[in-house]
Structure formats: C-alpha cells, structure tokens
Image (cartoon, rainbow, N blue to C red; front, side):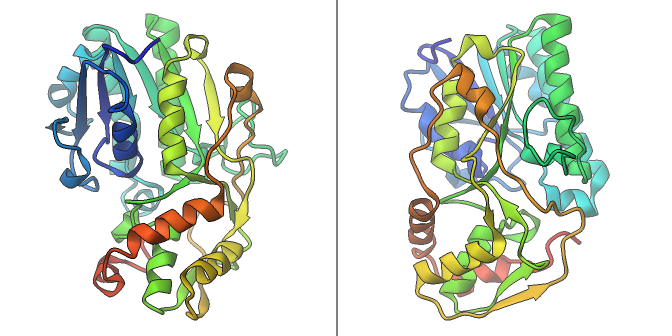
Length: 325
C-alpha cells in the first residue's frame, strides 16, 4: 500500500509520537492529512501548519465518525500507564472502547486500513523472559490490559469484517517533545530537565529495571513503513532496538551528556512497574529489512539539545515527582 495520494488520519497526532509521525507523513505525497486529538496531553503547536486538526474524543461515535472517510488511520490516541493507576476506568475506556469506536467509524465508512499502535506494556512479565509476539501477554496494569483489549479488537475486525488491520508494539520512546509534565512525564525528559537544573535525578525503585529505548523519529519512520507492507495485514509485530538499558545506567549517561553534577536519589517503586522490557524483533524482520538509524547516545544528545532551548526551572514547575497518584 503506497501512502501517496491517500487520505491519512492520525489519532493522537498532536502528542509526542503522533506529532513526529505526522511530520514524517508530510514527506510523502498524501492527498489529505488529518490529526484527531482531544488536546488533553497533545499540543496544538505540535500540529504543523496546513495540517487539519479535528478536536474530539475517541470514545464518542459522533466525534470519530469523520475518520471513516480515511484510506488509512494510525491510531495513537491513548491514556498513559501512570494515568491508569489513579483513573483506571477512564484509562480503559479511552484505550479499549476508543479503539472500538474508531474501527466502527471505519467499518461504516470507506473501510480503509488501520494501524493500531499498541505498547510493550501488554507483555507484563513473560514466564520465559522473552518479549516475543507469540508469548501470551500478562499485563500488570489497567493500561496494559486496555491496550491488549485494543489489540484483540483490532484483529477481530480483520477476522470478522475483513478490514486491513495490523498491530505494532513499540517499546519505550524518547526524543524531542517527549512529555515531562504531570502524569504524562517520562523518565528521560524528567532526568534531562533535572540534570540541566542541577536537581536530583529521582529513580523510582532500585534502578535495576531496564527498558528498550527507541528514538521517536525511528518509530515514526517505521510506523509509516509498516503501514505500507500488505503482508502485515492481520499481524502483530514488535518494534524496538533489541537492547535494554537500566534506569541507573540511563541516569549516569544523562549526567555525562549534560555535564551535570546533580545527585541520583532513589524513591518508592511505581506500582505495577515491570523489571524488564526488551523487544524481540525477529518477526518484523521476516517482513521488512528492519534497522534503526539512531543509537541511544545519539538520540539522547538530540533530546538534550531540544530541552536546552528552554529554562529547565520553569518547565520543572509542571513536573510531578510521584506522577501516578
């Protein structure tokens, strides 16, 4: 499936990953590009000039009805894992029922292609320790459960209604415009801002927990690429680096890259936090020549450079240290 000449929509397109995907899609000759977002965490300024923005709630059949006109929908609208700890009902409704509503709009419309952007959090803690697509997921949070429900709904619409649907499970993303604020705050931008402000880097737990950190521009490129692979219809694939880094190692690297002498402090472990996440990319490599452009240090340098444009003390006023309550 070529993206050229297509009407493409991105739910959550004003958010972190979504906005980078939109920028990448502008490099293709799409006929129409639409961002659908409720702007609860996404920013209007993240939407490039000339790109149509529709404000709406994915839980609303009325709001999402127009998405049925699209030839291709990338579904990234989401409530994050930390938000699920304090507001589980809202979280599940957005992540699961919101997916259903978008697919219903598409079934009633042109029945275009649908790319569901899931999460590595669906895996939980695999008994084998392998994060492969053929392992039975066992999510530890309502967020993971809601994302997994969205996956099953997505594949069911392929099986029952014949829609061209596919599931992509990205691992942990970072990069420019990553969230540092409120319950959206992620570890890398929080560490960077604290390092730039010479404030303690707060590690929740003992810091031995690891993540597979993937640069957001690589993710955007691969979401677009995988949407164009016809053989992936009905499939679920991981994307990630296949290498994991501990939070302790990450903190040390950010201190080095920023030249900061800020201390590292440990605090309580986040509920439901996973000890390890690391992508197995063997399956996606069966379909495409899967490779990434950006190693962790290079990507972190670009992310640091982005946040150096701002006053870290000012931005940290919007940070919440214990951001899952």
